[in-house]
Image (cartoon, rainbow, N blue to C red; front, side, top):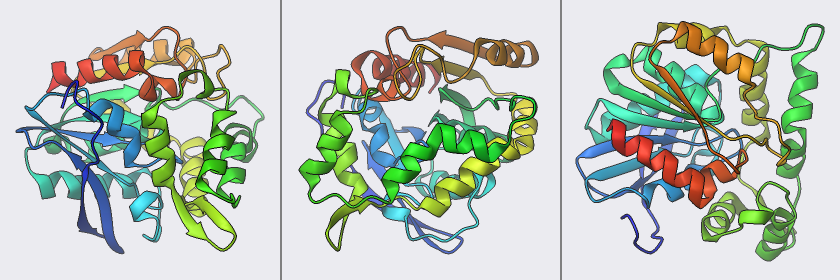
Length: 296
């Protein structure tokens, strides 16, 4: 796959609580990698990584419950529910234990999965996520949720008159405008579904709110899961955040504290990337793929 033209994945499904979970599959090699997207994302976020792997690899990436082709799956949501869904995907494709690459919220799912099913996970590659960030004293989780993902939640309720209108909306986004590419367009087109009056995102607002509130207000599961891990962990960070401002999503002091408790955790900052281009841009995707290859 490395160096080849961008190709559509094969889509499969697996039975989980409440119905069928859809997942994308690139390649057919014996070295299986599980890729997990962010809170308002889909399996298509993993395409830049999948297409930088070689023929020895298979990368499988679920549309997490409430997103993409799994948008119709009901709750409950939360990291444990997603982790159990992901365990079903790994067992369906075989090849365990696998390297798990999780981006943003997908990194939190990866941590819980590795804690709940260590037999299925050999190594974690966490992209800008996976480590709980303590709330500032006196701050409510709902307040932080609206600040961090409020604009994304607003977008989920919008109807766009056409696919080009949706792409134009995103072209103005400060995080992707500088590194717009075919991967971004493929991801955005996959995210849309036709509705009365045009197109809107497939992502369930209820899923996003439920997952966001759990991660911020009730981080105990993630924190305890992280402390229990024994597998190698590579944390890859961007120096700029969701809106391309020069502040990492995971603050330095939070990462330093995690490293003091996890001797198997290594960390790398990828220069000149933000939370989105860490996955979609050439520089970030190559480094993430290199970590996956080294750990598989």
